[in-house]
Image (cartoon, rainbow, N blue to C red):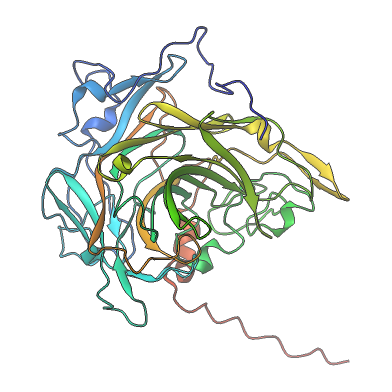
Length: 442
């Protein structure tokens, strides 16, 4: 990792200012976005029931956080929040009419993409004592899976493009017992997390160049007719930004475990073989910056060793995401990682060329989940159950004049494409191909 100067992007104002936390002052909501009074729109069409009327900004959100500034003093206005103060909310997609949540859905499914050992059940997602709880149990209610847990998504219900995203979270279980995989992350709306037909050749593409590298994307810059409702000659995908992942790493050599929190950005296409990511990104001095990938994609991230206290108290995990500029991760106001678009610049090597990869421009949605997987941290027999990932609040701010809270804006539409390809987003059967014409008679 090449340590670069901090503040790699975002200097829209002439002079830096001290970082503003989520307690930045504002005595009233009058200068916030008009979304503070907007009511909920229709729920996602999957499965499609009438939903509650709920404003985009939770009335319980303190007015003191309606307006914040970034490290450069650039203003941001609150666009969405949920304080989770109401007990007994029902996040199931199958909630009774007019009781369904308009922005967030608790999943009822198995996610095969990361070798999970749990079944996600909406019954594992509850609210009480001023927080959202995703609770993992070892009840084996869905054999052969040994665990049940919770995932909440805002897919196709609440999306945004760029801004500041913050969620105050308490991690599950003891800090020195391996097994849990808690996460808070963003994914482009064209991919529905865990629905592999929707993410195939879509995750985590963030590329808008017509070349050899881009031809493998399902929605390519080269394509004049990429699909219903999509813009011609526009590369699209479902890029991923992991705001938080937590891990307890076990070292058999010392018979000890170490807890970490991390943030990561995933992207495709990859750098050419043996071409390093040698600039345009920065990790804090107490962090371990890392580069990785597989046959499909690369990622850049940073992890930080933390104390037992991290598992007993709430901490504020934040991302400042500006399309075409960069992404900045912080915890409780301390910057952990920055990745600018310069880190994803065009590269040549090993007979291969890849053009500029993009800091995501895709409308993206919120995901919290509590997983268990041998791919991440093999569950210990000492892992206690039940255990919960607790969320105190979530808040989204955007720059004035750059508000974009749509899942299908004209610049990056998705609604018509998703409706025409419902089978990809419901794990249903693929439509039958049209019959082949009879062979020509010679």
